[in-house]
Each structure stands twice: as C-alpha cells, then as structure tokens.
Image (tube, rainbow, N blue to C red; front, side):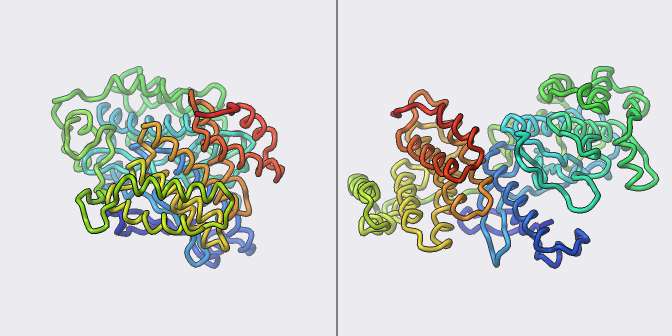
Length: 486
C-alpha cells in the first residue's frame, strides 16, 4: 500500500520514518484491479485512518506520530524511526527461545497491544514482521495500516481482492471468515506469535498460502504448544492454547490475563544474559532496567532539539508577550478580519518565543494556539488550513505528556482545532470525528474543564450535527459536557 523511507528531521535533529502512499498505477498493479480511482480513494481513507489512530495512541512501544499531510496529491505520515531487527529476523536467527526470552517479548508486545485496546483500537495485523526489537532489547509494535476502532459502527477498510486483511499464518478465523473482530482477534494473532517463539514453528504447516488460511479458518483445533515444546511450564502452555481457540467466544479475551501469566517468567534484575548471546536481547530491559539507553517507560531515547534558553537580540519580555497575546485573542473574539494586525504581529513574535522559551512553555504554546486559530479563521485556501493544522499538531505532539493545567488546556484546544481543520480539508468526516470524540470525552471528564476547550468542542459538535454525521453519538457527547467551564 505504501513506501517507507528513512529521513532526517532537521527540526527535531533525529531520524524519522516517512510513509507515503503509492501512486495510483503502482496501487493498481499491486492489487490487481482495474478501478484505480476507487482503489486509491479507499486506500487514501484507510491511510488517513492510520494517521488518526497513531495520533491518539501515545505509548513507548508504539512509534510516535510526528506529522502528516499531502505531497504531490499523495498522503504521507511521519513517525518515530525504530532502529533494530524485526521479530521475523529474530526468529529466523535464533529459532525456539527459552521461556524468559519469550516472556520478555510477549510482555512488551502485550503491553502495547493492551494500551491500543484501551484507547479503542485493534491492530488486526500482529505478526513478527510488524514487531521491531532495538539493540537495547526494547520492543516496538509497528504498522497500524489496517488497524481500526473497536466501535462496531465505524466503516471497515480492508484489502482489495479475495484475500482477507492481515498476514497469512497469524490471522484469526473470524478475519478469514469475514466475521466480527475485536480484542480476541488480536489475542489469536499474539497466540500464533507466542506459539512460534516457544516452538520455532507455526501452529499449522500448510502446502500453500491458501491451505494455511484454510487451516486457520476451519473448525480444526490448533495443536497444543506442549506437543512441540514438552518442557514448557504448564501455565504458559495453557495460556497459549487458550489464545488459539478457534471460536471467538471461547477464546481467551483478556490481554491483562496474558500479562499476569507471562510476567511471572520475566528475568530478574541482575540475571545473566541468555545463552547463546542475543544481539538484540529483549531480556535486557528487565535484567538491566538502569540502562542509559532506556527512558522511564522503555522508549529508546531519541534526540530532540532543545530550543536555546539564553538571551539573544530577539529575547522577549514576558509582559510584552502576554500583551500581544491578549490583543490577538481579542481581535479574533471580536470577529475582525483574521489574521488582523494584532494576529500578524503575534505570528512574528511566535518564532522569537520558540527560540527564547521553547514550545512547552505555556506562554509560547498559547501564542502558537492563537496563531493557528488566526490562520484557520482567515483561511483563503487549503494551504492556509494545512498550515493551521500543522501548528495545531505541533502543539499536540509536544504537549501530549504534560499535565500542568494551563498546558493541558492548550493541548486539548489544539486537538479540537486540528479536528476542525480535518473537517474542512477532508471529504470524509470520519478522521475529524475520531479526534473530536477523543478530545470531547477527555474534556467531559475534567473536574473543571476550560471554557475555551468547551467552546471548541461544542462548536465542532454542532458542525457534525449540521452535516447529519453520527448525530446520536454527537448529541450524547455534547450532553455530557458541563454547561460552564473553568
């Protein structure tokens, strides 16, 4: 569906992954179809859904969303780059693994998977090629290209042709049969991976790819993992077998239960490294948690540009910045043409604020928020709206992990602003709706939600009602918002 490039991000001073949808001719060739326009439209929508999902999921074991947009009419996605070897390469190199190694892999994968589920999404394509292991042993779950919301009313975008979405050998029976999918579908895929790690082989050995699909979709039970790994502890064998039960309602349906079992087999601090030695050792984060290559929750430290905090000729005085911010805010509130002179002055000041204080300082973040508002309010073209979207998204990315009340207000308002831009840019309201649902739900749970964020959530909700899009859900979410904010 897409090409993946490694690129250098000059703003963040780090390597990033850039995913770009193939040109139409290449999509037609890959998918063996003659309706290139419909194919491109559907895959573009699916691509944008992947972008929307990654914007919502912020977890150390899932590559961070950094940016997205269009180039020469094709959508692109910029993500954190993960340097390492795939789990597929790991299995090809080392084969059957001891329980502590398998536990180290499964726990890291399952934690990421459980977080995605709690965010409301299923992966649908968990397989060894979509798992990366860094040299420090940190596991990353990648490629959310066919992931989808757990919400059963959301449109499914799947593969073209007769093949079911997912990777043969790791896809659940219900995916093959076109049935309803959910958390147990990802658990089945995780069970296939666990089986392979414990035994060095697949649960089924086919004569062809189609035969492999038939064996997974048939009623024939998967063989017990203990048949091929007779020394495996019984609790591990039972867990894997329950993950691979064919009927979805009988299958193990709780990732936390899987984690509870496998965590008991993790290596302890100070344990010796596995033998033979592994170049990309997944036990290392547990044996050596003080490793300098890991941050608080296991993400490999990625260099970020820190804006210089020394005084320069363009050093701003906080009082001057606050006055300019208030003048621009009033200009927008009064309904004057935007961007007006105060908004234009604030845009010039924004760059100095970034150099002087950095985007994570509240005054800078609020300046950028108002600049994005002004750009969107006065948009004469899609390019202006794209610029506003970029400014909003920079705030979302940079402020996501900050809990200070003022910063959180800017973060939520920026997410709402980004959804407004998406609604203006996209023919399909679904990506904008997904973002609006997330920010409105979080805002409703705050003890004293900011008035600005409430206003944005209500205004965008009214737009969805005007469009007649998901009206019952919109009304329910709007009803959950308090009448006044902080």
